[in-house]
Length: 225
Image 1 (cartoon, rainbow, N blue to C red):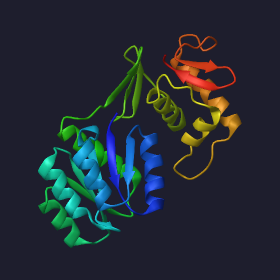
Image 2 (cartoon, one colour):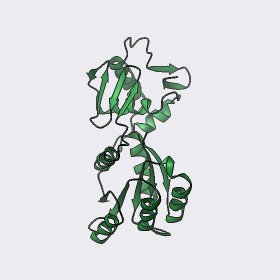
Image 3 (cartoon, one colour):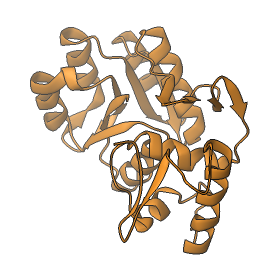
Image 4 (cartoon, rainbow, N blue to C red):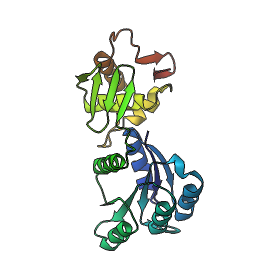
């Protein structure tokens, strides 16, 4: 799983972006300032795969963090910049940043840029597998024993969440929270039941006796041991 260090001091952006990227299969560690980011780069840079970095920070700026990252690590860097801020874009690229995206941005465009950079660095984990299932996160496709399975957007997101949390018992409330859709509408409890049933019908050999997504009575659901 790609682990992103997000350096951003706008709490609403951190919250929304973290939720979205986690649903897309990324692990996120967020800090709100230059000092905290520099400390993590010094002590734990090997834990991260990419740096997502705001230019303006409460206790400094992203340029210092980018300079340190490029001097001491091999982490790719994407800058988040204010729309039309040409100076920040040029400065960031001159410091070695790999890409930039202007705020406000479309989350799926950011995900596409992250995948492109990870491929460029040879770090992309584009294929997630569990038993006879394979999920290609770049193409957004799912196959079972080499045969493609057509899933709805919500079924795909549900499967992706299970496969990124293998071995973990996921409560219904946690699944409902994870399936908050991009339009901001909640998936209700009854809908969750329907989608788990539909997903099992598509991926299980015997949906009445599921082996891939199992029910843990009184607790929730689990994929894998």
